[in-house]
Length: 321
Image (cartoon, rainbow, N blue to C red; front, top):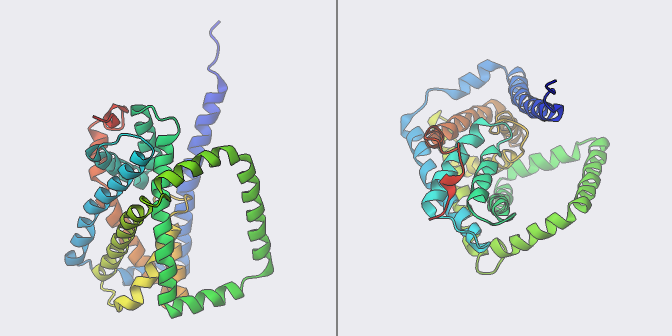
């Protein structure tokens, strides 16, 4: 008698589908909540007609962004003793950028390029660490820029201080609980984290490497801010650059939270909050964020060509020459 398929595979598949649906629902729920709070008319009024003279530069910046990202990934991999030709890294990064836009969580593309690189080289955990460290380099630069932006925006700084002071006591209890959970997780993952830290010292914090990492990452952060600024100008937001630019890094930082699809919902919620704290109309921040999300999606479409060409069907494409 033929046996039924092993049920664990089906359970794992259902869990994956459930996680995908949960993130889709999270993005849709946040967007719906924002529209209910701000009223759709206010957001649509802030959108205004798009100016091609600002949209085209925003789209054009996507190409150097991917090139610098690929260079940073190649540098990180080389520090860990892994071969990764720049052309291959450029193609794989475009594919990863597209997958990050269409897969829930915003990290599916990064996992894909790490998996493809791991299948092309015999590096153990190193290909996975290279991707993780490369992304950490970008977040480090974004934190530095975010701190500088906070210092340059008195309105946002005062608004954040007032908001933190107004938080109820349970919020602090939740924060302490989260810290305790994080410490427990650290104890359980300590051996793996020790290996990751060893690789990070080689590929990120080494004296000869850190300046290059920061140079590439700061250039990328500047380009992200420039794209966001172009999106604001594209819908007719004419606020002075000194007032607008410091508001962008906190919104970009929120996109690193892997709870939604390509940052949708989280990014718009962060923009509404940042604009509100700065004493500006939240609908304006949401409108800019929506345009930014569309521009980033369109900029990643060359990665879809890699996918259609069979780039995601096998890992041989990452084989170094």
